[in-house]
Image 1 (cartoon, rainbow over the protein chains, first blue to last red):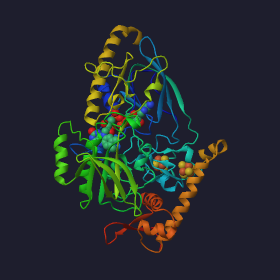
Image 2 (image 1 turned 90 degrees about the vertical axis):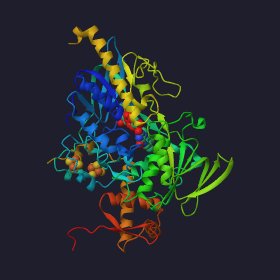
Image 3 (image 1 turned 45 degrees about the vertical axis):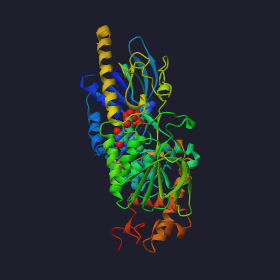
Image 4 (image 1 turned 60 degrees about the vertical axis):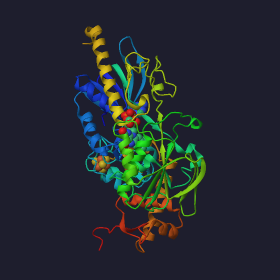
Length: 439
Length: 93
Ligand SMILES: Cc1cc2nc3c(=O)[nH]c(=O)nc-3n(C[C@H](O)[C@H](O)[C@H](O)COP(=O)(O)OP(=O)(O)OC[C@H]3O[C@@H](n4cnc5c(N)ncnc54)[C@H](O)[C@@H]3O)c2cc1C
Ligand code: SF4
Ligand code: SF4
């Protein structure tokens, strides 16, 4: 397949196609600027497109994201490059030169998303979009609302049996596809590379990975969406419908022993959200949150928390020290009751670890001749946080969303708004200075 | 029509990981299907029957569910475990 041919020059390069990158790209594109949006994953949408509902309104996350995703994909001023990478960004006197690498997915844009290939492919691999709870095929559509909804072949797990190519109606599978590399220019750059999730295997005493009924909150998010991995909410150890679920808040946040001393800002509220959704989905279930402090600082958050309490969600001010498994797959939590100072134990049949948000340090490798400074926690440093929150240490490089620190979706949108307006005013200034040379 | 897979096959071979995943899925699919031919079962029952850990049975059973090979039959008396059955193949008289 011919891959998308990029323009020689864009006004803005946006790195990362999560909600922050899309919002920034759309704002700038609506002002008439030409934007290259580069996403390393197979589709745009970031983490938000995989969420169930959002706190505190309980709006469906997919219903909010998908229109924005389609608008981004269709916008005449935005060129979206998925399964692509940016490398060697070189700052020039005015603007930036960079390498755009489009990697082969071995399926052309003619793919209709019919999924016939998935039916016949004989290889099953852990589905990363269901966070490993279920399998996918070596050829796969990333997830049901992926944009673009085009299959991709995981070439490392392909046996080259050719079955997919035999059945594909529009004949869009092309194993001869090669990567395409271009040199491209942009006047400004926005970093919207988002966050990484804390890996709970690091806290061995919680047993994640070893005890199958200990899951992460992201795995629970997936169980709470209509396109969930199982036929209902089940514990992954043996398929039991859970009826006594525990949440361990601050897993990997506010914890110097794992190198992340700061609050992740969203775990208290997403756990409270999931607890409410679980009580709706499993009316007989008890849900208990073990927390250090509840941080309900945003608009409507405190009311949302109180609503959960009124629904019967249990809140125990307790620091969980250790988790172990019983013969029946149930889990015993040993925790310090912060209110009484005593050590107590409680049994649950499913444990959800409310994992924290960590910096994505990709930005540190993107640039060739300049360095984007990091803050003390390794996020992109906002050099003028109070008056110009999107500015970074490099003139012409801006930051949007969780690339600069943990935040929820409303704050991410605000941050992207700031990034787009700061970028737009930067472009105005630059173009005034160099208009003749660019036109 | 010439297939592009025949071109790539001359240049590279399936990795060990790919072959391993293929084998494991085939083995589990066969074991689970054979067990379910005797009638609807819960995940722990299948696990017992085929001698595999229940989490692994769940993973492969739910993959088969996703690809329309099995369906939910009912839930047990305690409302704890679903029973699953093989999906009736169309046109199979
Ligand atoms: C379990 C859980 C539940 C949550 N629930 C809620 C909720 O209910 N309400 C709420 O407000 N918030 C919630 N959040 C927070 C929410 O996920 C974030 O606020 C939001 O997704 C941040 O968007 P983002 O675009 O900054 O980052 P991301 O979603 O991380 O997007 C970053 C994008 O950039 C891409 N990328 C990264 N590096 C590169 C690179 N080098 N090159 C190209 N592309 C790259 C990534 O693939 C990704 O698509 C939750 C978080 C978690 C973990
Ligand atoms: S050629 Fe590869 S992707 Fe296609 S069906 Fe065979 S194993 Fe799956
Ligand atoms: S690659 Fe072909 S068979 Fe697979 S989803 Fe696309 S059009 Fe359908």
